[in-house]
Image (cartoon, rainbow over the protein chains, first blue to last red):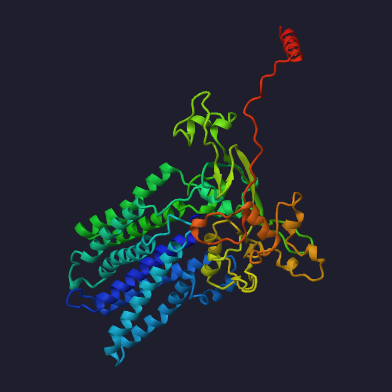
Length: 303
Length: 243
């Protein structure tokens, strides 16, 4: 699949923003464990909203006909893309309601509105994963691990970012203790990533593509001499040694180095930037390495 | 962007892409019968022996099965026109977030409403057959319509109410009709020749289908040696010429 930069940017940044939003809200309910003043709370919410909104806006950049994008909210009964759009638009009024409630005389409603925001943020992450996970035409993606990856990576980068946001606290609050939740999610993330890499759900052959049950099929001619929309969209070929380098780069940046930095150093912002950079590389590989079954009709033997 | 642009495929002077490409495949038959395929016997073990056949060894079970019934003992070229399959389980329709892709209840034709399409490419991702292509000029998805404007046009003579590809095919390889009617031409052809569909395991249940290829004529792998008087004379003359 062609790795479209707008979609890569969207999934990584809105994922990190939603993760940060979730952890900030959870942390605000446990002041005895995580001391966070109101200014820091709003800074964290602000960073989360900027990241999420930038991501969601960039996702519209790859649309060829943006004026019809409003219809994308209508088919939530069948389409995960539509569901994602609905939840994304629902998030903003829910956050506004929560922020209103915590400063009003209805403060007893705060746990209720907070749970709604968290559920909506998790739903967006899950729907984003299901957009890719529900396609039987891309066997690499068609597994439960695709939505799981989107949810866990969002929570993971959000947890790393939340540690950085906490470092914005006034000095007199004291230093940050070891961010256990970020470390746990970094380990969970790398385990899930390896599981995803090791398990390929199923394969289709060029014989399946023609319906031949025995014998071998090979392509003689693809039927066009020029590139087409299909070769442009699905014909992306990644060099194996390049993929190898990028894979280890993404594992180091997204998981290993942030873990080391968070566990043994106060360089929280470096860890956050590296984690997001690593996830950008990982997301680029997610698209570049996935192969669509239409490649069988362009001569590839197995997808 | 790569790809041939769709200029104006439906205007007064149509030009551009027609979303109906013809791909060509070879079904490799029994390597023992395909001596012209260099190295083929080494790469592909013979199904009857489990190893490449030795020189002079002839397999008894040399047939390949295509679909259910047709035996193809020799290599065969198949030309596969790929248009929209108008699947029963059209995933391109269910993934569409805007409702621009739809499947008509009355005849099952899958169409795109350009006034709703936002050009997100998601339906092209969901199609295993490559039937959908983005028109970069209009910013909307385009696909085979089964010539829905022709097949219901009562102004046309009845024999012309067929998709243009069916009418245009010089060898009459394409047929159009109703599979639900057991007496229609396509149902009878499918019953005689066998109906073949692609990537069944994905569960899309494509409606368009391919007739199984006919068994090719049996060709002797080598010419019989003739040894009449005239053949001996010709052989003698050939040898003289080669001196």
